[in-house]
Length: 206
Image (tube, rainbow, N blue to C red; front, side, top):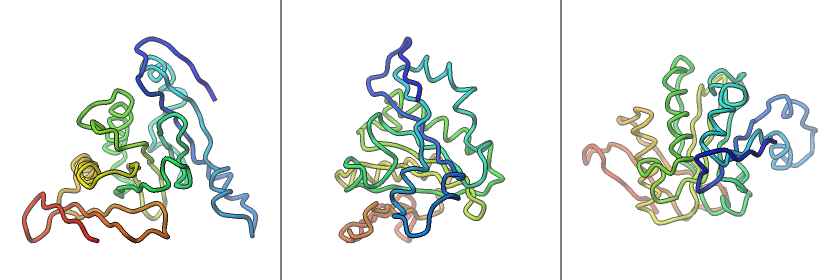
């Protein structure tokens, strides 16, 4: 994994991970799924500056939609693995959106905007520091699956991330739900979307 420091140093380093479908095809029956998933996700590069990111963009950060079906990218704060078992993620969750494979150009634009926004600390993207990482997966049935992973935090901070994803993906007419990483936790559900109360209504369900 490449770790380089050039100009325009970031306040937080970020790591690009690759979800390799070939690794999953070799999973052994009976082995723990979480362990096998951890082996399939491999760190590609850690960026400590924007210059380093752009210097490697063409060779290791190809548009995510050019990846083979079944694979994907993860972009997480340095030291945080793109696994819900990671201590930073364990009590958190994610907002997600799916899009048809025909929206490749739009999805590449959205993905790059999220990656740059996270690296640069753009207030409109991650002003409250709730987002710890993002995933973009390419699936044959679901199409593109975009996820924003959040650390545990107050409702207003989490709902702001949901509204961000809904706006960026153009899903204004759809309701989106916040999904907890730990399936054993059923104490918290958040929803953002249009309801009978009008556009922009935010609903919390306990």
